Amino acid sequence: MNFVTLSFVLFFLPVLFLGWGVRRFCGIYKWFLVAAGLVFYGCAGPVYLSLLLGIATLNWGTAALLPKLSDMGRKGLIGFNVTLHILILAYFKYYEFLILSLISMAGLAGWDFSFLFSDSLADIVLPVGLSFYTFQGLSYSIDHYRNKELAPRSFMDVLAYISFFPTVLSGPILREKDFFPQLEQKRVAEGSDFTEGMAYIISGLFKKVVLASYLSEHIVDGVFTSPQDYSSAAVLVGVYAYTIQIFCDFSGYTDLAIGVARLMGFRLPPNFKAPYMATDLQEFWHRWHITLSTWLRDYLYIPMGGSRKGNRYVNLFMTMLIGGMWHGSGLTFLIWGALHGLGLAVVHGFKKLQKLVVGESRVPCWLGVPCKLLSWVITIHFIALLWIFFRAESWESAVQVIDRMRALDVQGNGFSLMVILAIVCGLVIQWIGPGLYRWFTALQSRLPWVLQAIVVALLCGLIMNMGPDGTLPFIYFNF
Image: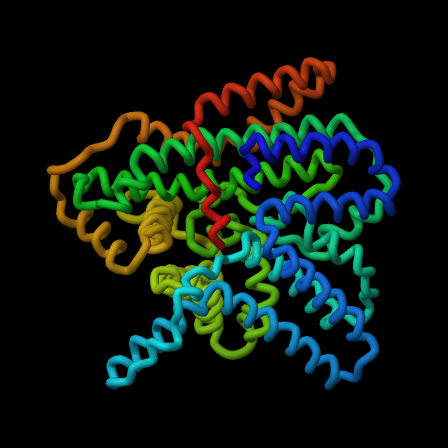
């Protein structure tokens, strides 16, 4: 169920008003949240509701059994749990890719394995949100494995955590510490919940409905579908446009999720902090999809050895390669993850070398250009280049886009000034966004709640009218 559709509004308004009525009663509110989450996810994919229930049961059962086992038994159980999650993800995300790859390699050897593939495999649909709630469930059971002092939660607690409807489809990926303390606290409806929640919702709507949708319809889809129809300059602008589109789309979803959760009385962790203001790749991953990057750090990079055991550069590379695989089974995602891993290794190595050569101080400029500015320009262009592989349908499509940019050909479709303005707006938002949020919430908090509601309704109506007919799905619904 898309956050920017009438069907979600019709679902959420009754949930919101009923929730405000029972939120002071923790036990009842917990059951209410579970019911709302299951209905919401059931509407998004009723066939796969049992899978969500299975993930919740598996992680609840694992955490409940861990205290009763020996150290060897604990290792075996958590290993089984992790393996089962990997197999579930592999079946839905990689099964067709692996079977077709096997058939292709067997064909080179003269063997016919085509019987392994059937039309039914092509009908396998990735359950929406699977990648997010499996990681969320894994974090719960792994945390209980690592910390014997953590008391197992009830099944209803875990189910409320896994099925929490603002985050179940595309995150942010919650941790136990983010959710359960808030689930247990008594709460009453506060004016700040409405003011701050609606500010996030307005921000998310503007990013998604206005900026992301405009860029998608007016240049990105065309450039990545038929780059040969566009001039080299237009293809370059299309790449910049997708760089802004994916930020506005995903951070817009995050803002909506944070706003909806805030109206329900929950505070979610931030997922984006002006990522395109980063001056190196390491800083970018501290600002982009923060809940995923910290999940990969805590449950993959550090267990591999991190920067203390083994080769930190290999660990970085492997972590980002697996991060690319998490997004999808295509070769383009592997390339995207591998190049990010290579870039991170280079940045870490450069910082280590810089520290050895010049100490803690930084070289102020290079050939008259401030190093911060130069570093930002290199970083943003490296990120934009890799987004080509993330967006392209295949390796061949990505190469076509890159070749078209390199051709320096003026023939073909161009781009409008509004596209440039939308790109600039997407960048400027990252700089002035926090200030706008503080200004808007401060202004709204001085108004009576009736006037607040009128202002919010007018702004939401204006934003929706600025968007295209129909609603484009969120990009990360595919993952």
